[in-house]
Length: 117
Image (cartoon, rainbow, N blue to C red; front, side, top):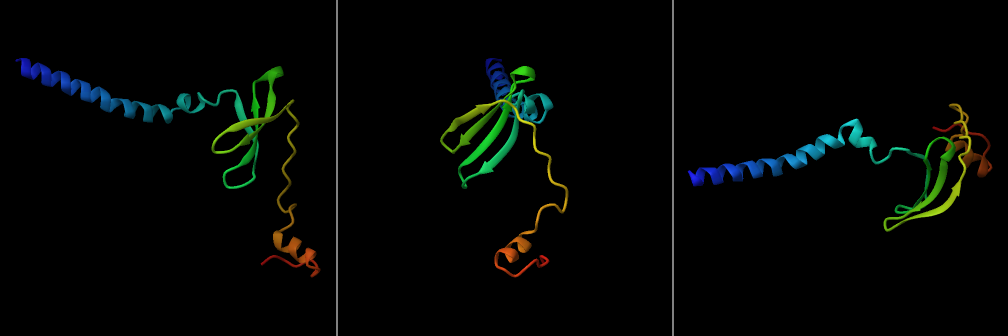
């Protein structure tokens, strides 16, 4: 009976070890697990500088303690470049308000206002 008890204990141990990755996978897909790391934080804007570098504006805190952090992000580090009070976000332009690239290029080359194809 000692061999069957040892085998049962080994099987139980293997089952618990196998359930750990499954439990972590399920936790990531729940709203609680997804928002736990970003509670009280929101990305306001991001500006890529190169393939590996970007500037990101993040809003942290809530109520009167809200702040915007301007961060420099590289693969090796994250640096705080500036801290400021939250600003009113600029409204997004209506559809068609932006000039198509082909029209801008044509104007710069002196060809006038051509429709983009």
